[in-house]
Image 1 (spheres, rainbow over the protein chains, first blue to last red):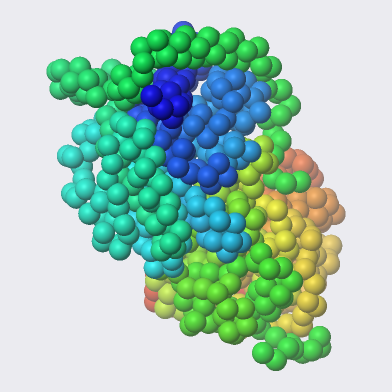
Image 2 (image 1 turned 180 degrees about the horizontal axis):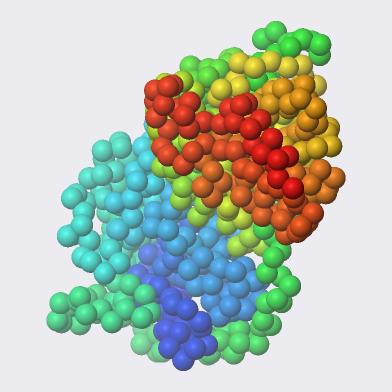
Length: 310
Length: 329
């Protein structure tokens, strides 16, 4: 057994357990508002962040908890931010769907579908000009493939020769409608229309995503152009925390649940190691929630600060 | 490129060209881009000669305003000072998500850990024959958005100084230039202008305060000159910026004159003139004896000059409004 497999399981499990507890928090009022969970998709951020440099900037979506944690954002501060506390991330200004931590090269979630693509193009433009050697990556969902922001940015990145990685998390649903009902052609076909390489990968395997992202990063560097990774996965929950999912065909969740990346990651481990890892992460997450709840509330007088520089 | 001497009058568009040139020379992190901005030298000549002088720091983009403006945001987040040109203000409307949902929130939500020191330059307003998709004056829409700074220069000096100040600003700035004033001339001091949000008293006076910006400034000056011959002494104030805006200068002036006219080319309905009048009413109450707004009538702008003249403010309509305030006690 490889240490990498234990790491993958641990990192995915941490995301899963934190999100499951956050769902309870939404339901019992410890979190005010809603949350868009990535349950079932954890292998994508965990795998991709293995392949990216730690300083490679990452832009995510409102389903971005996994990305923040995979970039190394401390769980206590992350949970505190979602709870609206005075976290070191956004001090309660971001919440579940719009948090960021540039100290961890996590340039932020984005609550506008496809809205993060143009800024990623710009980040890449700056890193290319400044010759930092960093390659920005952006996660979007399959639904974002129907947004103009995405297509404008892919075309502009292609013609201007700007290297960045677009990771399309194809989780089967564009919010509450099957993405196949809404999308004329697959993401990879659309990438080809912009002369962009696309790598399709099993998004429920962290090691496969890591390998695909590694190849994508190498291609971005060698060609100085955008590269797409389409990671096929399954969303094992609602679009958001309050989604009753009445639109799901009967039996779909059970069927999709058999592909759960976490079950798969655990099956690769020695059962004793797996159980020890599980217990360790449970303890870590329990402790993180307890500490997050102790973070102070934001100060009321902070509300009008930072609108402008002065 | 020839450089004008201090005493030589230059056009508004040339002043912008010089501001971009000087900013590119002063700071390696400045980049300039947009549609036809590089090799074609800019659709109105704002970037004339800059591609030749600064190479790929001045470049052309696809006709993709969202990607352009988002690219300005991302590159500003990572240490550059981008200046993106949007050919007509009307075209901002296809990229509103990037301006309002993305750029304007950046500093606030991150508590200043991520910032967006970028400039969006555009030009606006009606010129004879321009259709309803090439003639809107949209500054009030953006002044409504916390996190954005909004400038409305009306002279070559302000076109230069405000743009230099905007590029040096650590906040995102939208500069709404006046296409109609591009050929107008004035002399130039080539200084960056740190006076963000400060108005200029263009003409001091004691009877009526006339607040304006952008394309309407010369009309207000013309009206003031005409009325001076009739014994009416107007104080004309060019706001230069509408976010933030210099309410202090305006309130102090109206406290003396008791009368206020606000003139802008944008339509009157929910225009920024309403904000100016409301602010003065709140500050002065009954000491404000009379107020009028002069603005375009609230219709889409027709292409025919005969029709557009029916909607646009003029020196005459401004003069009538000024006289109206005098008639009221």
